[in-house]
Image (cartoon, rainbow, N blue to C red; front, side, top):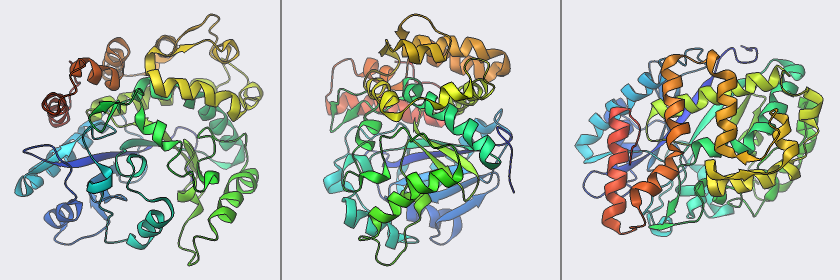
Length: 406
């Protein structure tokens, strides 16, 4: 079935499984599936939410079971499933941990690929890219899927998403620590995302997608170069172009949707859904052309958007944006921080957002990204004990569906 712009949404949330006693990652998603279903399968339908495996054996994905138009109570649905998973994991002395990166994981020694359904695809990825790095085995995100109907709606949605992508990590950054140390990036996930497929650069491009605004052009300019580049490696023809495309937003013509991938997972579903709602309402504003004409949105080359994105993944909401042409897209006439820009955008769309989500968005805008709050909690003490103490509190936030307040 085809849906119109903003008629429905699809949301996917990824979580790590960790041991209760020491928060070490534990690759037992297969055991979780057995506890729930009695057997190992790749997808479990659990009412309105579905559970599935990922590339690595310590990450489980929760997603809307098909498109939904109910964003108001979606965080509660996700939270109920999180509590159920944690209840099942008691038998394995394990639980779910939020945030986009495990601060103490050693991917060289701790990465374990999923060995069941689709394992031949994951093995091929590992053969081509070596998935032991942080960029493959230590990155958890929220994927936001937005539908379009035909080329006209695709053009409007893709143009708006490309414009907004550079500043999304200012809201969502939650990965400031790898290997027990500050990386210098509040969104380390996106920093490693840029290069984790360097062997075949056609797959990620510049993260910001190219200026393509029709299905035919997308196939020619994005899918065909990917298919050509992967051909020598994919001799058995088992890889799908829709999944090989790893830009920060990817067109899924198999389901007529664009999937945004630059959003780090937060400490609780309440935060994830609030960020999704703010992104959706801002995209509606851009698509309406109330701020800027479609043709002016389409003029932006990825080479001009990428430097802004690059700065934002480093400093998140504190990033100073001094590209006046970019700011003018949002009707802002003086330089400001990425956080200030989101404040301005929020004021423009707040009347379209429910009181519940407004409270959540206002907390994030006032207190900073989760990465900023994690750093505040760490307070320059990167001892293993202190890191575990902060991330134990994040685990509690996930269990209570509440914000982390350092």
